Length: 148
Length: 148
Image (cartoon, rainbow over all chains, first blue to last red; front, top):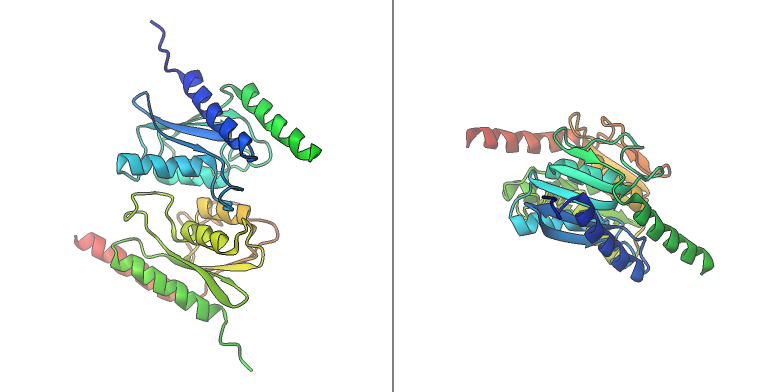
């Protein structure tokens, strides 16, 4: 039987978070953290809303997930994020020792892989899940920015 | 006339924050952020207290400083931190475009310079300020850990 809770399913949930960010005028990036096929934390980019350069979707989701679990480690969790994490978020993933990172679109400018940043050696990384949907949201945002 | 508000002065304030962390049983790292010779934010490592792997002294100080200034950028600010920032905190410093980073002890294991991580090209970096005092606090912490 097919498992409905696959990477695409959870990435769609992360894309919903990105849409919330877009509606707020934020760069549309969304994230969810999943443990045992359950979403335990959600986050969307809130850099402008909170006036805080550290308020990336992943950072907010990490803090919410560790709060939910009562543990600073997320070894049995998967982060789904619509855009490749940056150096800061990869660093946070390192400290949280997250089990797996699944991202959507690659980020050739600020992505951790392009910057040769490290995640924890036990962290599995997979990119390109619903990348086109993520890129479409980002394109919508930047086209709006140019018009304003 | 000598300026009493030099790097040593502010690093002592960061060391006081590190001492607060030590008293809480945290790895003793402290930080202050300074703008126009005034401390606008303080932070100490709270990873254990908050059960949050992202709760490094610098991260908490960045969020407090941007909240104080009402700006996501810290271009005219200096971060004083007792230990060389990690990849995550260097990434946060990049996004905040902080003017200057002054750190105490180098961190050969997790320091951003050892990991070849980037800060903003306009960010000035200076290490080694009161490094021995910072190392002494860290040594005290790890000796206590080994005894328990």
